[in-house]
Amino acid sequence: MGGRRAMKDISLKALNVWKKLRQTQALKGLSMQFTPHQIHGIIGPEGAGKTTFLRHIMGLLKPDQGEIIFLDQDSPVTFSKIRELVAYMPQTQSLYPELSIHEHLEFFKTLYQLPEEDYKNRRQKLLHMARLEGVTDRLASQLSGGMYKKLGLICALLSSPKVLLLDEPTNGVDPLSRRDFWELLYDLKEQEDILILVTTSYMDEALKCQQVHLLFDGKTLLEGPPQEILKQKDCKSFDEVFLQYDSSLEAL
Image (cartoon, rainbow, N blue to C red; front, side, top):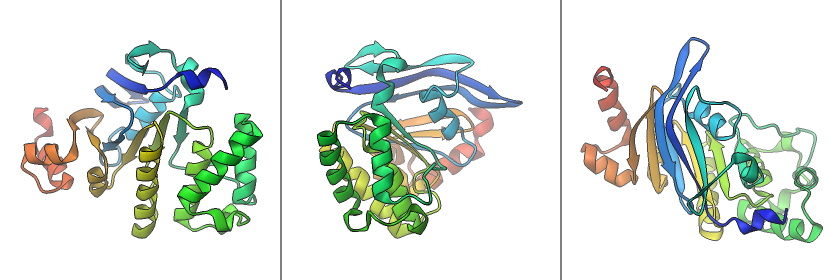
């Protein structure tokens, strides 16, 4: 674990990424750039290619054309060198229903080979941020949808990653739990040097990000601060932005 501390700011780029899955062209020349210390949102409807793109970042899929580039303070690095600095929370989390919150954290401590003192400090901080300190004996099967998502998040964060990839993390939870989850992400951004990348099909969540990347039919439409994009497109919401593109997609 010693080498990982030398890396400070990890950023990444996608350059002209194409991918065909079976008979479907899932990604069509997708290019995006993600900088550290910000919450980036990949916004798009279902089927836009969001999950496919995250799987490319994680090295679970390889592009037919183009590349994903990781940068350590502007110097390219291979994914294998920073793999332990990247945490991924998929849409369907693999938590263990018969394990408690405490037992999950102990399991991931062993998985990440964390020193005991580092683990204790990290565990205390994350439980406090997630407001789960008082329920650590509760089984995963007994958690509400929102608490279940937060448990998955703090397990991913236990290793102190520099890049956090979240695939539709608020999908299927109630509005209050969605708000709590975003507050946790804000706290994380303020307290740690981390690049947070969130995919979502909830258009209102675009406004919660510092940078948004609009994805439609496997293509990058626009990137930038959300309010600037709304102003540029003369729209009041991102639903309106996507409706504009949906009606003129043949021309893109």
